[in-house]
Image 1 (cartoon, rainbow, N blue to C red):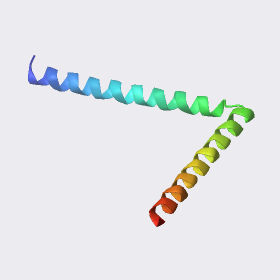
Image 2 (cartoon, rainbow, N blue to C red):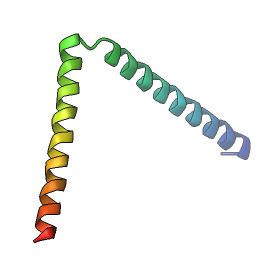
Image 3 (cartoon, rainbow, N blue to C red):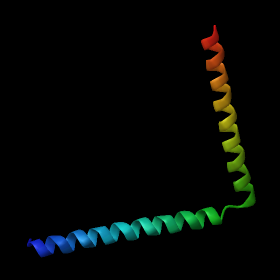
Length: 67
């Protein structure tokens, strides 16, 4: 393969990667827009539970360090 063919191949690969990434981002955006109100609420509450669990773990570590 000549140097110009390698350049063309690299350009094509870069273009295809960019297109694939763009398509994936578009798909993710469509999925997030199509979330129902219920699903959005579940995601918010799930994040809240994770925050509370992390806070409880931090407090537990602080208490065990104090002893």
